[in-house]
Length: 331
Image 1 (cartoon, rainbow, N blue to C red):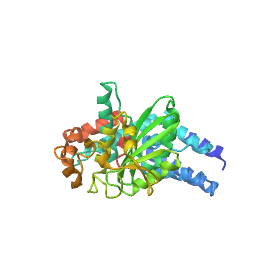
Image 2: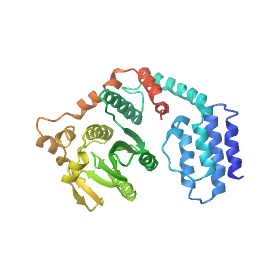
Image 3: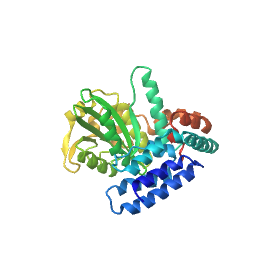
Image 4: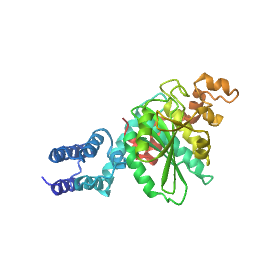
């Protein structure tokens, strides 16, 4: 079966939309057959990733995920199909069903998963900044989405202007904060990992292969703010909220950085950053060095999640449904 035959079968699905799960099952079947035809093609990993996503996520989230550009007619037709208006009613029904499921479940304090919680908080912060003509241009991405996102983001920016944007990158259950600056065709990134989790080294390595100028906060594995294994998302969000308001953030860090041979890029100690970046530190060395500025992590969590804590699961689901359809794929 040639690619054109697969393309035709994809559009035939639009004539018989029996339900989101059946549509996804049929697409996965076609992908399996198509992959068998391709054999060891270099396109196979991207198609396999799409197949995996279809087995895990909602159609809305699959179509919205950042992906590499793939030069394959079947893949491109499939993505066109997933983005087409023909699926709007199906996506709406899928979202409504998921919204009802989320709102009916009783969680201790939040009705959405961690990625979704972060997106809600980012959205609320962005709305607040827009009231004073500012913004918070931040995305929550899985690590395998980062390359496609950066390619698309950079292509959309004006190289004659200085542009800032942020990413909360998740590798399995660990989050790392990435603050980017783009100007004159050059992309820079500050990597902030409060736990100094080794996973951040993979991010650094990836960014360097993409010719990104990288600077890491944290001079070594002992120079860390986080001691527990549960708070990386809170630290990462906090750091990006703060760093995104600093116009000369990159210049300031460059002035305090030294080359780190292990990482292959410049690094700066957390102690070189302004005190507000370390006020939630669980490392007693930082709190002893900065008396009077400590804001305990538990108090900070309570403050930044007050919207979620005071809202019922149904209200949170309504916010997610209104602003972020992809939130509704509760997994």
